[in-house]
Amino acid sequence: MSFTLLMLLIAYQTRWVYPEIHAYFSQAGNLTGQQLATRSRDYLQETLDLLLEDSLNEENRHQAHFQLELAYSLFDIGLYHNEYSCTRPSLAALDELKVKLRSGEGVLAGDLRHSLLAPIRCLTEIEMHQLDRRNSVTAAFVEDTRRHQGQVLIGSLAIFLLGLTFWWMHERHRRSAERATRESLEWMTRALSDPLTGVGNRSALHQDVLACEGQPMGLILIDIDFFKQYNDCLGHPDGDKLLRDLARLIDETLGGQARLYRMGGDEFAALFDCADDGVLTGHCERLVGGLREAALHHPDHPSAATVTFSVGAARFIAGQAGFDAGYAAADQALYRVKAGGRDGWQVAQVNAVADRSDLNLEES
Image 1 (spheres, one colour):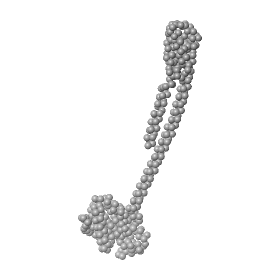
Image 2 (cartoon, helix red, strand yellow):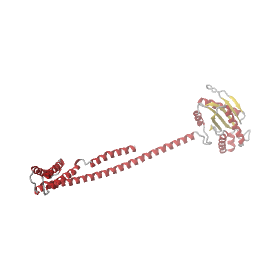
Image 3 (tube, one colour):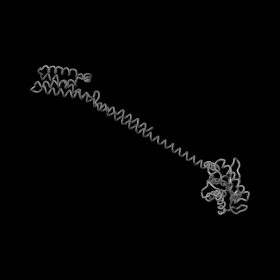
Image 4 (cartoon, helix red, strand yellow):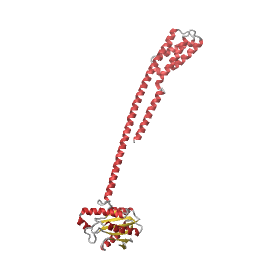
């Protein structure tokens, strides 16, 4: 918009200034009067010089008559007739002088004073008046140009400030949009993460599965054995610390290759790309074995002195139906481990046909 306004201002300046300059320097209209009067006066002056020579011969008389005709033709214009009262008497005197020169009569000094000096004086008056008019036109033109330049300067400054205002409004809107986007992303991140451990939550697990639709995925469900007893014995602050420590332990054990989620109070899930069952089995073994090596003390474990895991896993093809079947299979495998005494793992083989899943269990 600012650029368009500036172009319109330049176009206006071009259409206003150039015709004025052309009109002035081409000397159109009444301003040519000074030049005509000057030329006519020069011719009359030359005629007077020829007629005042001591030896006035026929050649000089003809030359004087020719100069007089030229002066008369430049003098006899409508502008001078309309604006100057001395024009008509001066032309009449020149007519009389032309008649005398054509007839060959002698021209006396008194005749010259009446016939030439009065027209010369009239032409001089015209010259001075036309010069004053030209000066007036020039002054008006300069004043108009100065005023127009001021208008152009003020208009350009206004357009510049308008452009700055538009830029500021655009920057303000852009920053506001960026802030809103950033806040939305932060809100979405908080909405899809567990505030205690910083890993994803159940909603994040569903979104990540749908984002990988059609790909083979592995799902591991991890349950902390006798976590309630741990909380009851040591208190919830220590229980919260254990959850954070176990989230880091799971991530490190899986080598950062899986996305982690907290599904509930003491249950975690891990999701990762998995093309064969060997990868799934290896992850389960490392999880259970890594926790045993960490030897985190559990003061109220019924059958062990350290914290233990119950792990169930399954492999599935990402998608809503595949995830439902895989989650159900991994969950059943997890509860089989818990029913078998905990501190172990099982992998379920999923064959999703309609709404039925067949479980072939591999366990440790």
